[in-house]
Image (cartoon, rainbow, N blue to C red; front, side, top):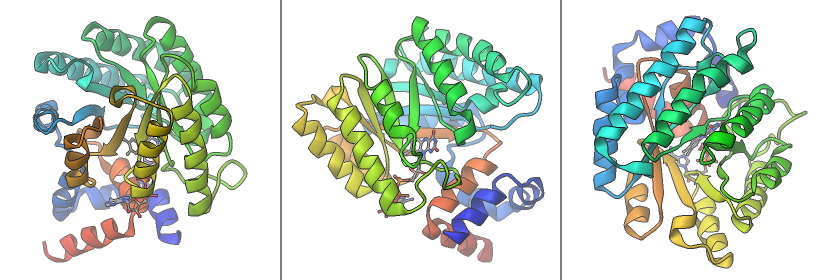
Length: 308
Ligand code: FDA
């Protein structure tokens, strides 16, 4: 818990970012979780996943940007990604995930700016028969992100969002989003949140995840079960059977490079599986959150530094 808190704090420290990203051995470890620096690398990863029957959602890395120009770059990177995905012809087998903080959400008038910049991305996704999912960041951004979701869904009803089971508000949000046509990715939550707004114990987060999953699976929407946890994967299958869901009415999602054998096994057994595929040069915060989630990843990282 302490280690995880320290790593999450480190994910927002520029000096540590320089130290970690400047270490050559880091690259080998990062490669396990990140598909590459360029769009071409990401498209290669999407093709390889598709060959194994696994869908993809592309994430152009970058968050917490500080200028409007950087926000415009995020929009352009996603438009290029969708152009690249159009060439693969996978339809909704490959979509994109965006963090509104990369579109300027935290800048002055950031809500409007992020919405203006993400609209063309949603339109480009619709034009090639696929979707955008809005990632969820720390709890202070949720109202803005859900309001953006409402706006985008008016024109692009397939736009999805993420709910974080660790937050106390999430059961209510899950009820509100368990509606026809709605796509919701349920995750446990990757940010260090205060006790006033979040469950802090793993067993409470797991119990909340199970309750939210039941709400989404019972409803008429399209649940996206974002977890590597064998208990949650098993529960998702149980609930899908209990609510007579067909295999194409929900999906499992896991991160690129995490339990890849299990991703392939589940896909081969008939479950819809989608991998979340991050790419780009700005991988530091994403990478630190992955370390914070799992002490074994930290060991792997330290061993790799020692053997460089
Ligand atoms: P958890 O970390 O609770 O681990 C439970 C068990 O799962 C472990 O005991 C182990 O058995 C297995 N496991 C977990 N990690 C493993 C690994 N690396 N290797 C092997 N086994 C492992 N968060 C957020 O706040 N906003 C977001 O938008 C997103 N988006 C997102 C998309 C997708 C597709 C996923 C899968 C996750 C996210 N997340 C996220 C991250 C999420 O909130 C959470 O931090 C991680 O998924 C870790 O939680 P788990 O449910 O996977 O299991």
